[in-house]
Length: 413
Image (tube, rainbow, N blue to C red; front, side, top):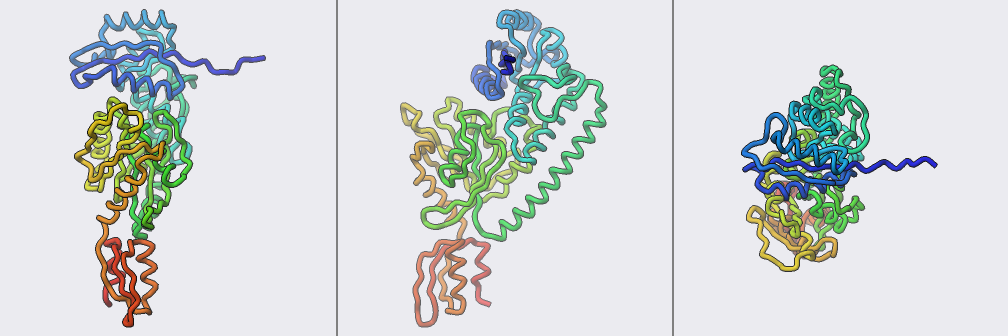
């Protein structure tokens, strides 16, 4: 018998704690989750407190010697630094340590490469990887071969002597394909806007419960796992509120602190689905000790994407995991709800907040329709909220709330 199981890589996490990164342990906890998600195990940690990151080797020479000893003691295969490394830092670290060197960005890119299922998702991941690696051909020795373990999935690794022009050519091809997909999405979005069904985009920090919410409300059967970036490709489903109003729910990729700008650029077309939504459902893991920092990271990412002036519903999820119930507030949200989505607790409150949000986007209509226009009442039932329907001698008297963009259909000619 031949043993075919792939050996789990042993990783040491390294962090430079600077005034900007004043909670290195918390950041390394998240990095450890990322490494586990990528399929490796963590066998050690090292933190050095510095005024600023060492431009030559990320950490100082003394800590570098300690790190080399720790690698020997733990038989580690690689190190992962908590910040994005420059080409010079890559080269100097690999020369000094003689093991594979990675950074947080490379691990996230690796996870995305493994989770992308649709053609667009795979193209976006490859584009992000090539943009990242094109500036690091000199520094990354492990680019010279197709490697095993984390940090090597995706488009395949390029040899050191590869012509940068070939990479730029491939990037141009991928960008052209993404532009085609963006145009297709723009056409779809335009058709959707003609159909006045409100769109709610579900956003939040990774592993907060976004996919669980979509599955609970719509039975979308999106993958749910207690892992970072369990789902990558966006999913849109139709949902009918208890009062009969219809909305579209769109799940988006999870956000994370230090989200690589390569990913933001590559996934901008996907993330901008939230930009064209009417409502933002912000799912927050209330049980996470870093909740406030995670919320800040989400709003910062939304700001980078230019997503603003939206109705925001913040759902504080996983309340069942809290031993005490603190007062939870989000001053940037229009509505806040406490819930335990997996336990189906608070779903009625979420529906209530969605109903109020949708109604706030609608205008009141009180009108008598002649019987020859009775078909318009069907439009009101489908896209609005019918309050009163009274049959009179002169026609059908209706009171309703309808989308503002539909009002012209019911004006007198």
